[in-house]
Length: 141
Image (cartoon, rainbow, N blue to C red; front, side, top):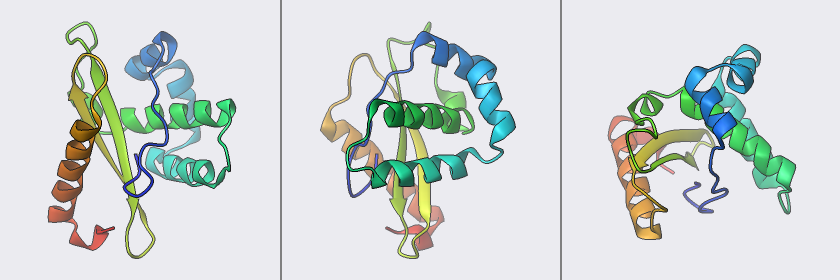
């Protein structure tokens, strides 16, 4: 979710992708070997995705895959409870450009059954942004 443009993609990990995320094998294992910096490849993918006039299914799938890849590389992912323990888990990647043009990616998660409302997501984004800026004030959008 971008601070200026809003949500780019709402997706759900299917069983195969979720298992790969949990085991870090198969799809995720291949990505780990190919891309040592998950944040860099996600930032590049977001830039390419944003440049598309109308993203197609292949582009949405690629973005979903790199979002999942980035997710498992974060400490936040370690806080997400297995689906066998909760009714639902939502993982977000919030991003913005700093005044200097650098892309900032910040992960967040929330356990809840069903979809989250827009106000709840906006509140979570606000919390993540302000928590980040307390430690890194130069990263202001």
